[in-house]
Image 1: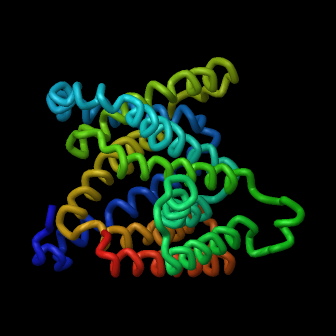
Image 2: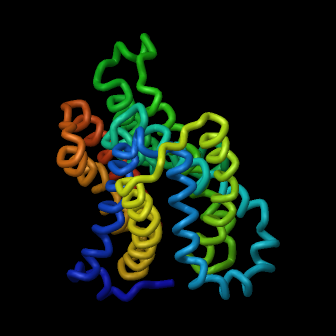
Length: 308
């Protein structure tokens, strides 16, 4: 599908559609950190997708019913997408926020385009040019700076924050999820496709959230902050962010939104300074510069090749 050339003009509406998703996703990281001690991570992940599903299902039930044959024919890709993109990625992000900062989570997440390239080259036989490899090396170096807090000696001493390692694993899951989206589309419109994944992913999270609640006894009582947090992650960070993202891609193509997505660490830095009183360190700036430089080099290669 080709976009109207006029749609590449950044009108106020288009600009808002481009800015809101990284803002909401950045807020999701800060909310996840704020909820440490108030709600367990898997409970937050389950509640996020369960309530988002309740809201979206009435608007997509017809499309899902009409597309049931397509979903049955793509059962295994649907299972993989639900597991990797809904159950694993988001749950791991909330787990990671218990032992690392929202800014570290955002910066490691920002390296995901590079991990996607590496997964394609290493596991799926996709061709990766020299510039893409250089971009990958720069971004991986940036992640290394963030994970080691700028202290290379930490590599030898293995003094990593557990949350950073969990987030790296989450980004790997997201990379495989993205390739499944590209190589095995479910044959539905974007929102019904997402809702199908949400439904199955929520079922996958449920037994682990139940064990967390009753097996580990990690079930603090719901309070107004928890209710507001769940409402935020379900409505703004999930449904509204995804809808704005889809509308932005429809208006501008995929290339321009990919640049705006890299604003998420900027929003996180501001939000965590306001709400968590956590400042920005020099290693954050250095890591961000390397990650964004790597993404820029990789995207230049895709642009010249005609990709988006």
